[in-house]
Length: 172
Image (cartoon, rainbow, N blue to C red; front, side):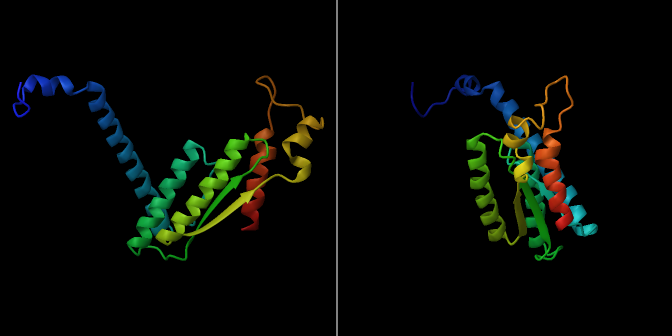
């Protein structure tokens, strides 16, 4: 068999159907991302909104933050919003997360700030945390709260995350 002769059967055999499906899924994801960016651009351009993005740097909130940052980047490049308009990003350190996740938040937030600066986004980043008396260890190990279970109403997210975020938003 010559290297220069191509048998069509060999080409057909090398195409994996999963690869074709993967490409179509990637196109759908890219379209959903672009559509979301367009929606955020409409908000910041037409409504003159200032976006506050709450980001844990997990996969869901990171994608949301990337959509917002891309919308800001495009709008600033198109000169449809002023570069001084802030993008407010906050994350909560509950002090109850796994150490690698806490380290990743520090790592990712530095990269996020560097990127925002490089594309001209006026990003205001706040890392908030519960007060000492509301920290997980003090509340739950100290007996002031019983850990949440499926049969109990849990207020862990309220105490450790929502209260801190709401306090930050009232200060802005």
